[in-house]
Length: 82
Image (cartoon, rainbow, N blue to C red; front, side, top):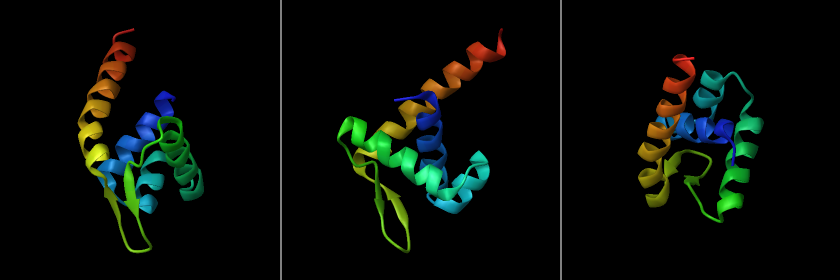
């Protein structure tokens, strides 16, 4: 797991749209999709329900999102104070 993967998860969890999340992250949709799949594979979990029409957080993804956002905010605060 990398901080980048966590950022990708957080942005996709907020946007619930691969195109918008990828644009916000300045990456391609396939790169975002690959990173999220790798994150899910590393933990053996499913964080998003996906189909051709929508993206939704699973119950686990919804529970994990605020914790990841808090962790990212903490890392950003440390970096800002350097």
